[in-house]
Image (cartoon, rainbow over all chains, first blue to last red):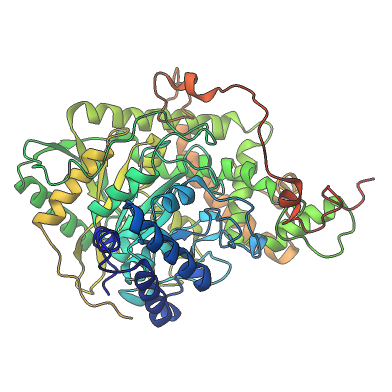
Length: 482
Length: 98
């Protein structure tokens, strides 16, 4: 059974041609066959998956469901009731959430079958999934390379045909970059578009949940189901949710597309550059008007992000203190000793590094110089985008300066790892939606992603352009190495 | 800004983290590199620029963020305590504070 297309599965299950149980069994079989090589999943519950599929099979005899029987994998920083949710951390190695996140509730309401929890960098902090306390997730196109991060498990699971659909979270590129590295489609929605109730917080002014799939139509399908106001997340936006699939297939002739000059400056791998430039010419050939634009504050984005995100993380991660849930060090001498040793033994190095940078940036006497200043520079980054979107409907550029890098290549140099987020962090700082679609492969057979960005709540524009692009320029994907 | 081992120890204390002697040197150097990199934000003129914290605020956002303070069913105590490393009877138990 082909597990690549959520629409096909949904239609087949709704019409009774295929049962949700058969789909779930096929997904489990595929996971069993290939995941030992990739390490995409951290937790699977086969018994419950099949019971859930049977329930869908009974329901579709009564009425259809928008995601009937569609397998969905969920990043392990998204809470699932009574299903282990580790955030890739020793601190939560045995954590069973007492409630499910809103996105999981909405997926299940739509008829999806939750098949498991996917690996990620610890607390979503990383760009390679190597910061997981449990395992790295390997790239299905080259097992010696990273899957990207932090949602590497979700991207690899979709790319390897283990599930047609997965959720990730994107704080600085953590959905788009692994999607780009693994040759799949990943959407970071507008800040506030999708409820984050039940997403373990990393950097609250930046965190977004986003879907990963094989094509833009499936992204549209799932987005329509999970987006929208949720009173349990006060930052979720009271903006109506359209049927994102309805505009797909419409011509994009006359669409105005901006190409940000700063996204093609030094540091961009020449092969990635030429593939992305060619895909921009492809987009123009669909009748879109290309305009060069400037986002002058892009050069400050990484520095800005690596103040804001760690500052917010240092506050959010204070909750892991060995009191209410998760790991506690055995036989502490007193309360302070328990706090310190629990956190020092429970957190990995990158998490500690960000907590330290963040604590420093928020500490007495430094707040205004670091966090305060960073939040003002952020205003300037956002204004760059506001100005650009006065003249264009969408922006096109690379997702990552390089294709997937080697496992171990950047892990000992945190700053080099941070710099790989240069083209993705700005969308989080500005709060705008952005999508990564596969647009080519390098000589070595590694996927390259094209990033499309649009103005706040203009996901429809992104998806329309993405769908037009993949329809007009289908890719010959090289075989997976699994 | 030069970061010393003493600075790192002070911040670690605030963050409730502990680094042993062996880790401390490597960590101080990395910390310094990261702080040197973010120094470049000082070049930016931020006079009269307001900070941005919620990036996609809609015009009627405030209307939606408040709700009536109604009494509702919430998480049962036993569920809230189920993941605790050391649950007491209806409470979280911690080592002696004083």
